[in-house]
Image 1: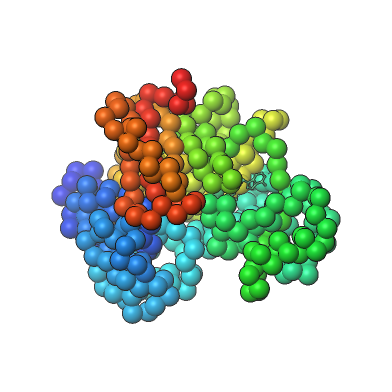
Image 2: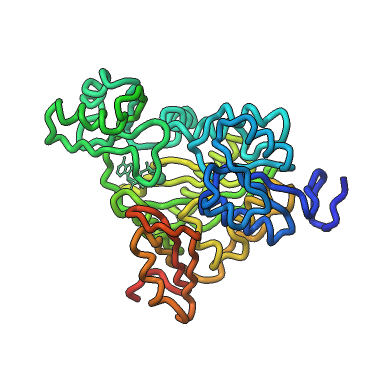
Length: 375
Ligand code: ADP
Ligand code: MG
């Protein structure tokens, strides 16, 4: 099939083709908007009609991720399917795979959605991480703690996000308190986890790479991320790091995307240690909160890049034309937006959520030509 655009490759989807998105959150919303910009339509599968991505999608399929009827409808509507979150059953993708292309593929999700798989994958590929150990049940926790030492972080293997599903164990707890931390996370249901050494890093970085089906890549500048209570607060580019660190971070992300043979986006979260070493924290085969600055400060946003990669369009230019400082609007922060109205170089993004519950990502603000709010 020859496309209508000169830069299209064989198999490229035509305008009007439908991109299926599993998940109705803000990442799906921004992907759908980017898809519309490029002339595509979207079908979002998510449970609730009020989910942010449904407001901008051409089709909404109200369905759980494991309902065959909903998945069948998605496959009927969509020419290609992607996902905007990791917390979905692999069986859903296995159900869809024979009917419709899924990008990124099942393997990327399998690796990224389970911290034991993820850290095993990193170890096999000689990528440094914090010392860690699998905890395959409550009865293993105390003996694994002896191996990892203090301070440590216990994380649920599956289903954690925005710092949820984590407990810090700093060494002052007794055995009863430590096991209670497990019980709080597992809520009495059988669970696997990982125990990690809690690192004293200098800073946190992330790198996002886009990769197409021919293996062409476009890598964004490393971003400097600050978390509050384990939730992303700000992301800043350029990151205050050396050229060597930047190169190292990019090459780790490139290697991971290549090894996974990933088509789409891969975000790699890293810890920069005082020694200059880079340890990978986790990876995500989807758009990432730390890349929201690309909407306003890069020639091609991460969302457009995802759409390009999965529809067979040529990847866009990822380079940045200004510095940027992105701040998440979490919960009641949403009420601060009035102060940004009419201010030059301040870009406000809201996700269409009406209930500003504590900890809920309601939107974000990107300050252009700035690397902090105080300069
Ligand atoms: P999530 O899936 O919630 O993003 P992460 O593993 O990325 O889970 O943890 C969230 C944040 O918690 C990290 O960005 C970092 O700030 C902190 N954190 C996680 N693991 C460690 C660790 N081993 N040492 C120190 N801080 C950590
Ligand atoms: Mg993280």
